[in-house]
Amino acid sequence: MTVYVIVQLKMTDRAAYDRYQARFFDVFRKFSGRLLSADENPQVLEGAWDRDKLVLMSFPDEAAFQAWATSPEYLEISKDRKAGAEGVALLAKGFAPGAS
Image 1: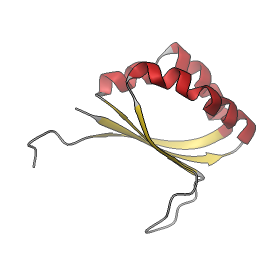
Image 2: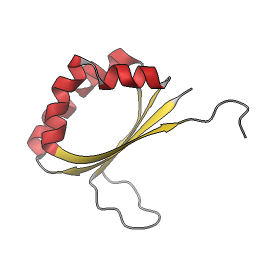
Image 3: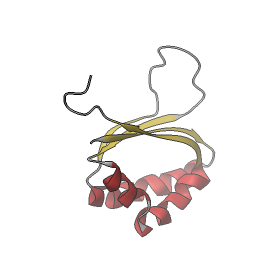
């Protein structure tokens, strides 16, 4: 079942985050993920939003996500993400076909 990763970021060190971003796709493309949105100016429709960037990714299943998130390559570059931004990350399951 497809899973979605929703990340909301507040930048704390743009240079560190930019280093992460520059290396992101080299790692990401190895794990069957799809980047659906990476928006630094999403339109807030309701409520207050105090973040600087929204990222939405999908993976074919949770195993593919975990393979990416725990890979040595991603753990290495994620040091710059953690140094460069405070984040809230959510893992959400997609609907199963035929589910109501």
